[in-house]
Length: 155
Image (cartoon, rainbow, N blue to C red):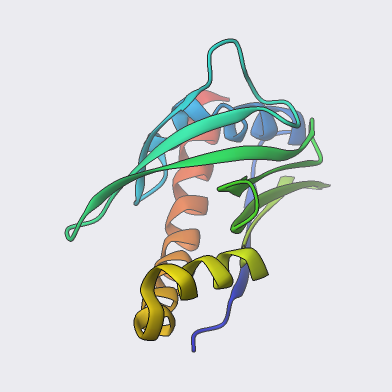
């Protein structure tokens, strides 16, 4: 089975608060994610802990939507959410460095996610989890590079 946790970082030549404001605006996710093409907040919600949003994901094989809840919203420090409220964690941290911000994106398949896939896919669960893990591992560096490009262009 592919590793169920992955993290990668990039330096963005902008202050942490500016990078946070960009990344926490989930409605802009389609500008940098190779899989998540659109996100929208529940009516009246925004980037705060407890808020819910929907994300639309597309690959050549399929299109699907997920519901996620913001777990952490600490401006300039950390922003993260839980897909399905407890299945998979996506998170960003923002650390000040001399050149701007060390932006780290991490992904983790959680125990509830593993149980959900076992129930949904049965004997095929491991293969389905591997597909999701490989996608996360390959998309994170692409996402980080795109966030850097967008943030620095808007600076």
